[in-house]
Length: 198
Image (cartoon, rainbow, N blue to C red; front, side, top):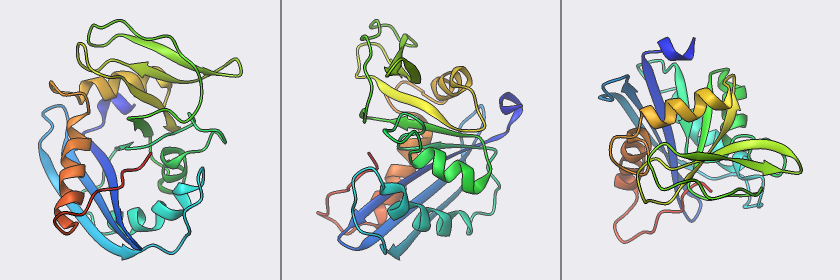
């Protein structure tokens, strides 16, 4: 079961013109210590097309995964899973290719409607689209902006929400994404803005 898995992995990607900086960071669980980290630099070979960003970002991420020394049990993606107009965002696409439990944890919403959760940490409501539950809108810290959690691959929404919260240690975003984003940012030349995964 996912609950018994030992290693959590987060992926992040930064873009500068036609170069992708893909970061994959593996943390132990539940203590959330970094046990492996890879950042790769590779050319972007797919054009920017809204709604099809996974085709642009998957190849650099897969290149980073091949260099890991530690096999992750669960992948948390800075992007959408099924909370996507086509119900197949970056987290779903990556999870299918890797055949691993995968969670989408996004900072912004692509589609759907929801009621604002209460201000307390752990409060959540469901993200709905055309009568279908496509994700959970979660308050990971009291009085901060929500994150949008959705199924990527081989996991339930309740498990995705609970596991993401378990990886948050006093910040809005899970420890995994903070490490991965720092790692990707360190490879981007100074004064270069990061273009995060939506």
